[in-house]
Image: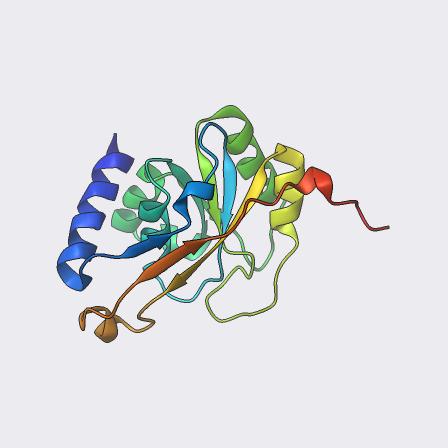
Length: 174
């Protein structure tokens, strides 16, 4: 319930601040199954646009552990289906938690394979999670303002979805 409330509130706020976003190729999103929505991480508001664009599907989010230190932000994150990840020392729960969510709930996973906004190096966890949960990966990209001041200039935001990738079609390398 809180997730839907927050998605509606954020959608309205983003519309007021920046106008209507454009969503392209949304028809490729899987309808009756969970999946991993994967994108490069470039801004802190990008996850908001991606979750709205892929709606009505609900998502879980991996978020760095430090974000959960603020009690207000922690409340919002937890009630918006986010879970904490230790980036400097990831443990087994970094893989187990999203796999369990993908298998046992109606939540898909929004994930940034680079793990941070300031990295271009992809981490391998996304593929491991996708294989273990037996879900497809949907690549997507946010194109729009990268700085907060530009968001208020009403520069066009576009979210594009790519064709889902079935990991069972890809052979493991040895």
